[in-house]
Length: 87
Image 1 (cartoon, rainbow, N blue to C red):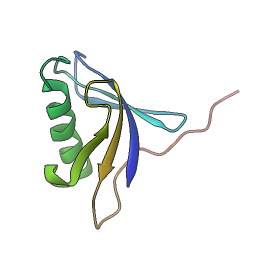
Image 2: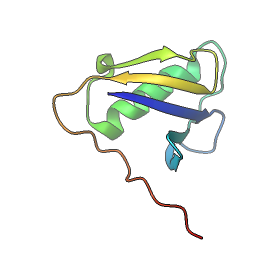
Image 3: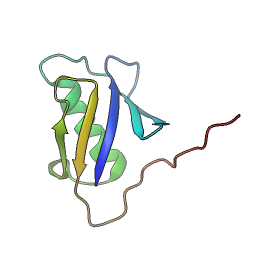
Image 4: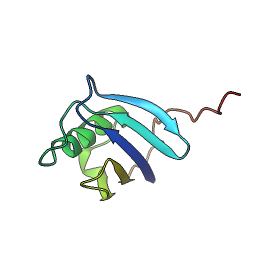
């Protein structure tokens, strides 16, 4: 599965914020320095999705807040449901 992610580094906590169109917004505590935020993102998602860290790869955006992740899993992923915009 390919997932578009928008990461907000140096946040107060690690948290999945939700969907913004086709992008999953995630807050990460680690700063965006020397790959710390990327490492914490993968650790956080592996726990949240209940899959091994080696099954999550950053395909694009290693040095950007907008990322494209490849997630390999035999079981369904526990991603938050996409909400329709309220008018």
